[in-house]
Length: 278
Ligand SMILES: [Zn+2]
Figure (tube, rainbow, N blue to C red):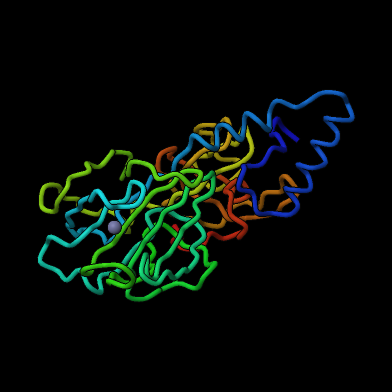
């Protein structure tokens, strides 16, 4: 069955894959060899940060600051385009699993999104929640509304990016933001939810990307290992049977310019939520 490895991504959620991985590990130990592949795959996963986008709606311009009493490497955002900060939709900066939290006298109502691979984002002081706790959210999906709950002197989004629990310098679309001591020195216009696609991880190795959603379509490129991809849309094509799964949905990848079977997108659903049909 091809050169694909049975090594899934670190954030696998499918019991069958876990079982296969356990079996593979057991076999490797029985054979007296320690497989190098799982460690290499885990390492590759930790390096792949999501392509985070601004935590507010497409086209809106906000200003941001960091103050010395701030926890970790947070930035506080307020609107700077004439619109109201209070009540503005708060959007997921990348896809993941959202959980609700509350901390009186601190973060207030807040959401944590687990993006997998050790990456999380925090959104504090929400006026209200827009998703259930434990919900999977797509990039650009509304998760709450901007407010001033908890220890806050006015409506703003307190936003953080953490890797393995440690606050990181915030990057949006791959570019590091400044850490000014006050507002109206730096501004950021959001392209989140503008229709540019949703971020996912693939799993497996030697995964073929094809010109169309059919096994007869030309191979345009191959994903060597787990890869962060941007899915712009999905459609039904040839049914693929691989790695113990059967699925006829395919995802169109923005940066690779072709389609990959949804079997290799690291999400438990056959049809990805929050992704439009092609
Ligand atoms: Zn803050």
